[in-house]
Length: 130
Image 1 (cartoon, rainbow, N blue to C red):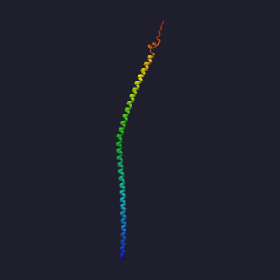
Image 2: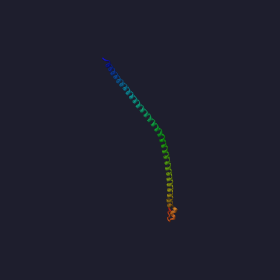
Image 3: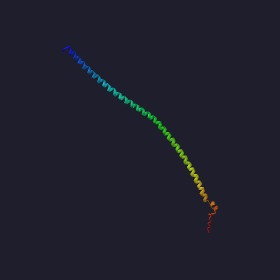
Image 4: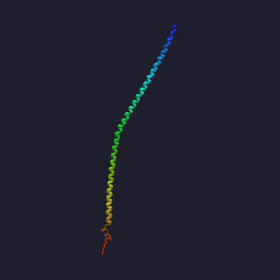
């Protein structure tokens, strides 16, 4: 073997070693990249989950006082409506009582004995038992 052929064999061996080391480095970098992507995906998922939980808590904290305010307003409106209805009901009862009283006075005065006698009708009947 000549020195040139040995040199070319060494050169070829060095090229193979370079290629193989490059493959190993690229493989380990690909594995590290995949691991980093998995960790990043997990972390983003965790952050989004925590953000959603905070959003739900904030919404609950907003809705609770909102519901309470709506409930207070509803009760207040119901009380006002009931008070107004009761006032109208009492007014209707007063009107009905006065109307019935007036109607009764008119009817009773029309049927009274004095009024009948004044009109020329005398309903006094004497019963003689003999």
